[in-house]
Amino acid sequence: MPTLGAIADDFTGATDLATMLVARGHRTVVTVGPGAVADDHAVTADAVVVALKSRTAPASEAVGSSLAALRALRAAGCERFYFKYCSTFDSTPHGNIGPVADALLTAIGERRAVVVPSFPDTGRTVRGGHLFVHGRPLDESPMRHHPLTPMRDSDVGRLLTPQTTHPVRRVGLETVRSGAEALEAALDDPALADALVVVDAIDNEDLRTVSAATAHHRLVTGAAGLALGLTGPHPGASRAPAASRPGDPAVVLSGSASEATRAQVAHGRAHLPHRKLDIAALRADLDGAVEELVGFARACWQDDPQRPPLLYAVDDLRDLAETAEDTTPPAAVLVEQALADCAVRLVGAGARRLLVAGGETSGAVITALGVRTLAIGSPIAPGVTWATAALAAEDAGPAVDVALKSGNFGGTDIFTEAWSALA
View: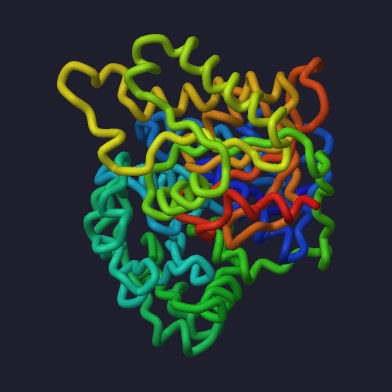
């Protein structure tokens, strides 16, 4: 029976956290939404991560889906909870990190929770309450240009304050470096009793200290890095074996506009057959444009099954620019729908390996495929792993290996090298 329940605000974040939990000795299952939490393989896990598509949803919707996930996790036996959001604190001035944290605290009956977006293995650190990305303040990083959640302030407390009804406080690095007991005492100070507390952390040892100091907290919030200190009951917990074999049809579906993914697309174009989504064509005839993309991918499989085709949306930020007459639906929505439709048709045509880039795109693809659960497989890069997707439909065919990549994660060559982890 699971005792640790996590709620992730997007699908890439869910697999990111689950990978960390498996590495720390938790038998972990990712469920797509709260409905699959009661499935047999979920209730026999040590930890269950519920993947939601709530990061950019209206705040009321994000709160509602998060509370539904909490209810399902509690019914499954979970006693401790982890609200997982992105290490770059992706949100708008109105949420959704603050509203969801507030709602979870109220529902669990707790008064305070830590806020720990640090994930040093991916270059995210917090010092003096400011969030840095590979040493650059968040508002000077590529995240300042994010099309959905542009981050134009590096001060986590300042970002969070308009989103929450709780006071926002901070505990500095000097307290963290004084050890777990000192940090625990600081967090238990009555002055922080009703607060969301931003905690500095700049390396993995800091995160282990934070985990130790919050072991008695029923709710923690943060990026996947905080799981470094959550040692589970089964050291060396097994990872799911690959469901596919080398040479099985594979495809890369990239909807992310992040700087890292654009570099990965450039590398992929130099090494893989590729086709760029045509926004105008999608707007004029979505079904026809998708069918053309699917036909291209299938032809690539026949020509050279060792080189997965790359279907991508963005290699320049101007690709998603809108004009006054063509903003309904927005280009980003068209891209998500098109790549999700491509995934469904390609899986139906025999695809057994999908690498998906972008949190919103990953959510659209997994939802369209009708995936209920993800079993964590081989890691690819910090924050990125292969997982075996169990499809809900009885006639869906064999399981599919999927890698859900946050836009900012992975090396430049991930589209060409990720497949070796499945061999």
